[in-house]
Length: 403
Ligand SMILES: Cc1ncc(COP(=O)(O)O)c(C=O)c1O
Image 1 (cartoon, protein in one colour):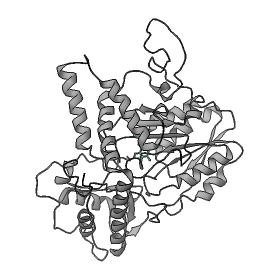
Image 2: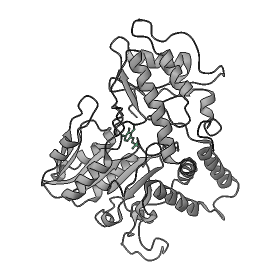
Image 3: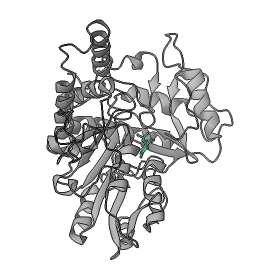
Image 4: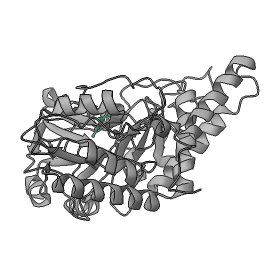
């Protein structure tokens, strides 16, 4: 498959210059086909002879392959938040324990840990400095009461990519658990749970994986599974799940101990469609393409007088470019790009945020740079070059919603 022309897989590119994958991405054609196939079968044949749960198992295998994990270490979650809560609510905490994270996390990776305060667990946060999270400060924050470090693989508002391998190494050598919110990395940057010594990882599929919302991946390292007690048990999580007449309260030994009941089959099969596509294309190739695009964007923005907040050094660059203007109103820029030119980016935490993916092209990057108001001008966007002449509905404006 030609990585430079994925318009058949992403028909959205025919209507929009969509560079907002760090918010909610369009789903791939492969994901949409899988969901349509499920709906067709469910409508016309019902669950009779269905292979749905076998296919869901295959999706678990694909997720394991993406993460370099084993299938038993993977299960599905509703979203990133739920997977992080599996860990927060599942570990046996002691009064006086603490958790180390950053003060720049998306709230999904804050509230599950704050919720532990009544159990005497403190949340320690390391601040962001100029769009960066210094690794040494995170490591210095670990003390003799620290049980776990939790961090986003890529920060949502700055695009700062954490050196997961270095942090994972520090945690393992200090005997501290390491948990990663991977939603801003999975599907666009390589994540290897073994090489990075990650104990727990959670990510929904609706950003860089280009799957539907509400079908996520949760990973727990095999050696850590027994430490996690599910807080919302149902019937699927038990070792004798199929034996409805015998109640035996014993959790499965694998990650499926978090499967309370029936699956979100439509969502999981959709996620599987995109995982297949990503594994065929190869995450390294995807990462190279996206990093080239974001380098090009960052350079163009700087030339135009914008301040690029994102760290573009090879270790810390990601698919997100956050930038600011001290002359123009960010919300107005975002709105005009969207309404007049069908170019889709976001505003987050006082910054503009662009996040192109593998289906975007250098031409689309140049178009975005071109359309942004120059620093000498007072007008917002220049009135030329719409992305497409095709009439289309503008995507729902989640504008200030913080995803
Ligand atoms: C770093 C990060 N974590 C989590 C989420 C979303 O969490 P959930 O999948 O629970 O909706 C976002 C959404 O923007 C995010 O940027």
